[in-house]
Amino acid sequence: MTIKFGPASLGPVDEAISNLEHFHKLGFGACEIAFTYSVYIKEQDAKKIGDVAKKLGIQLSIHAPYYINLNSAEKPKIEASKQRILKCLEIGTYLGAKYVVFHAGFYGKDSKEKTYEKIKEEIIELEKIRKEKKYTPKLAPETMGKINVFGSIEEIAQLVRDTGCHACIDFAHILARSHGDYRFEETIRLFKSLEEFHIHFSGIEYGDKGERNHLKTPTSDWKELIESLPKDKKIFIVNESPDMIRDAAEGLKIYEKLAKK
Image (cartoon, rainbow, N blue to C red):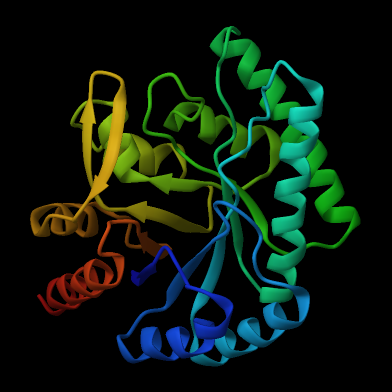
């Protein structure tokens, strides 16, 4: 089993290359670029950043903007959501990013079944455009932490089967959504068809409705995660805690210790 660690942010464009060099020195092999509010990297810069990441052996991924709902009751909002994802795929191609992670949508007034069918249709359409335009990152809808938001492990795994997309497995979200159970065995079984696992991890505060906010990652949780992961896959873990660089470095240190045993 090979696990690569990294943070959920690259920082501003003018610091991106120096940040990648710093991450390389820390032993990181992953970094997610947070386009959570806007796609802030242009084509020329994306190519330069992508070349450096490749040279340093750091696998890039993108987190698409938060303003995405593929099950909106308003068609223009669905179209705007798709355009945001497509823009991430375009810039991600220049970056050499492997995945575009996104929050697929909300149930709203629809049943879970109807929501699933709608989101599935939109992802099939996105996959078609992705292939036509030869965009290289894979679509990776994320497992979500709030119970009123589309994105249970069952829903995301079904999307993988039905659309050919990839997935982002957020174990902190899974813990919050199931009120204290990481569901490692079930999750690994549901996603066993994926050639590699793209994982988000951190500490998390949650309540009756699921996720509240991300916290520092407890050492015991790092150990539990690493010991539960499959041995026959490449694994990339992106840390989303408020102190993501230090937390990712701690995760790497724990992994290296456990690997020596």
